[in-house]
Amino acid sequence: MNDMEGLTFEIEGINFTCFRRAASTSVILTYPIPPFTTIRGLIASCLGLPRFPDYDAQLVLQNLKIGIQPLNLREIEKNKTVEICRLLKMIEREAAVRPKLYSFPSAPLFKEFLVNPKYKIYLCGGGLIRKIYEKLQDPERPLYIGQSDDMVDTLRLNLLETKETYSNQIHSVLKGIYERCEVVKIPYKFSEDGKNLEEITVSIPQSFPIFLDKEIKCYQFDSEYV
Image 1 (cartoon, rainbow, N blue to C red):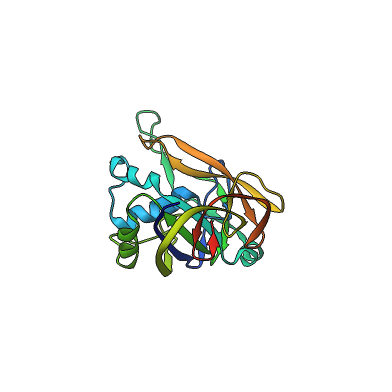
Image 2 (image 1 turned 90 degrees about the vertical axis):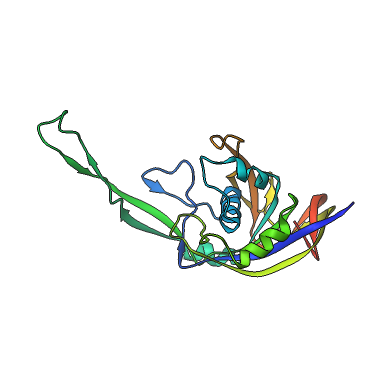
């Protein structure tokens, strides 16, 4: 199979990070890994691509192949914390409805945080790999993961050749359901109009690499299979 350009780099959340689960309401839970949409958003920021609703410029990122490996999974699980916070938003009612304005403070929220999470990211395909490599070192906008105040460090960028192959030894999370893994349904990408969200089910091994009973299609990054 033909070789293609690939990129690996590490991201490290500074202090606390929350990848809010889509169904979370009064108790805000976090995914254990950044959603694939979060990685695409990180790349869009480093490239300086327009934000929604001017979404067409970001469609090229939908063609990227993305792999994720938690680097400190046991520490992430051990140090996960839940804090109480209050949403500082006052809801005002118009004077036309009531004789005077009333303000209603929102209820307290419980929010789950990951402490200093670290991940290795694998990218290939899409024709933008070299440009992403350059811009991650000199981004057009500040980089964050999770929420806008969850700043992130990008480390150990490595531009290399990769190819599609088969292996039973995998160094990243896997699409589908596998034994001895945490199974999570996670956001993958948005539709072309940017309004509908596609989710996929992934399995997160407790350690890497994971050895499977049979070979599966994957991408080779030096000695790692993703």
